[in-house]
Length: 355
Image (cartoon, rainbow, N blue to C red; front, side, top):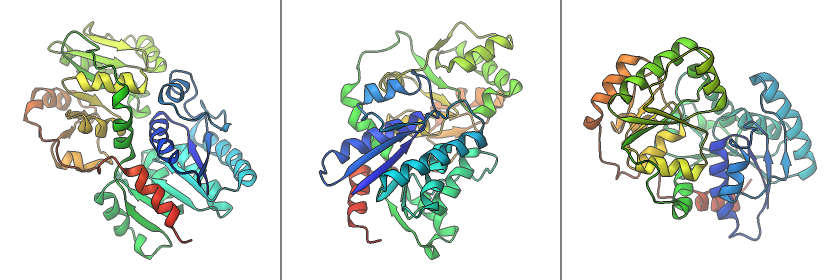
């Protein structure tokens, strides 16, 4: 069996690393990796492949730095050529990026079955490019690998029981990755003082000057009581400087971190502040509460369980969430996202699937 895996963004590199590790146990499976280049600088891409031991991509596209339509179109055309050459049995796509959608579209057009890992997620906000990508990818996929029962429920409500697709609950591949790489972590404290770990990367937050100012002011206020560690993309760092936004010295801005370094920071943090999707889950895996700087989230289970809290970008809500953080649920024992055996479940399903 030949699988063609498509990745392009940092979280996908981590997921692919865990899945590729599982594939090594199966001699009858060949994996071809396509890196679309959606995240295209060394800190955001190459370092992940090197540190996580992901097999080097068989194909590397240079699609980074383009607008949504141009990027997706470029990837679609390039991936189609690769698929026609490789003729895989399955195309594997992860999550909800432009790379995900481009891979799914290319495969569907030439009738190669698609397996979507992290299927069924919904934020119910069609203004998010990721929401568009995940809905369309789900509809094109033959195998829908859902991380939770909530994701299955979303698909069932959308009529997937009547579609020519198969839904499987397999847990979250990110938990596999965390378990796989936890043994490689440097367990020493990365920071002497207690701190909160923060990330800001969503375009609607970093490209909107008013939102960015509100977020920085919120962090400045929190930093009066607790140091904040903020790994930041150079583009966002430059935007802050260009706009003359003042940053509290107790907000420690770092260069983007490798996956293992980032997890080590999270492991030793007091709590997490983030507008990311995947980091919300990783915080739960590491028994940390997360203040989510978004209006909605696809990981609704963690809001319903009160382990995490949604604040949007409103300064008052963010500060209030910080003050009330100890009232959040401190029980992280519920296996919401499986047991860390997602990769194995996916492989067994692929091997036994009757097309």
